[in-house]
Image 1 (cartoon, helix red, strand yellow):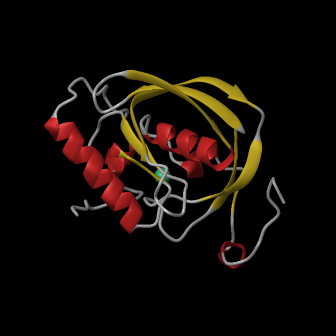
Image 2 (tube, protein in one colour):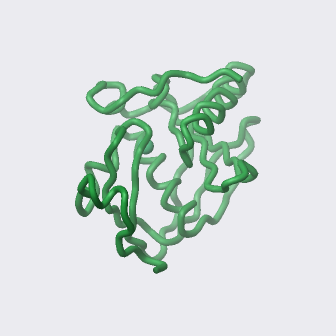
Image 3 (cartoon, rainbow, N blue to C red):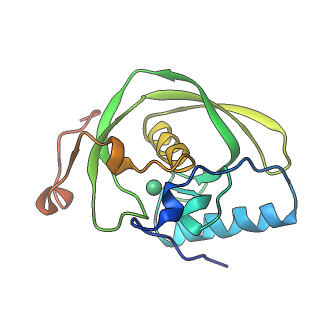
Length: 165
Ligand code: NI
């Protein structure tokens, strides 16, 4: 298992607009594997390439507890958004902080897989939230830029009212 170092807030890498991934080669496969390993080790539900210092439009997402739902998305674009959800969000690049963020409840996404084939998926609830969060990273946007409010230290460790309660 190869994990990479996660860049944290304050580093300019997180503020850049990433370039399109053009090559679907072994190097991309290695990046995807390393990103998944890094995400799982950090117990995150998503990771974008700029978070490991690579300015390419590549993200991984897995909102399952048993790591059975890995999505690898290259050059992803949101085609449709439906509804809203308001809830807790954090980021591996923004350690020890959380905020309340409003996101679409459902999204339809077009992306390329590791072989360059165009795919589409519809995601809802937590997966839709994670996808929106990771796609923002590709344009240099962090959840702290779009949150409704930041949670206090106390709230981070307690229940807060969220959609779905
Ligand atoms: Ni993040």
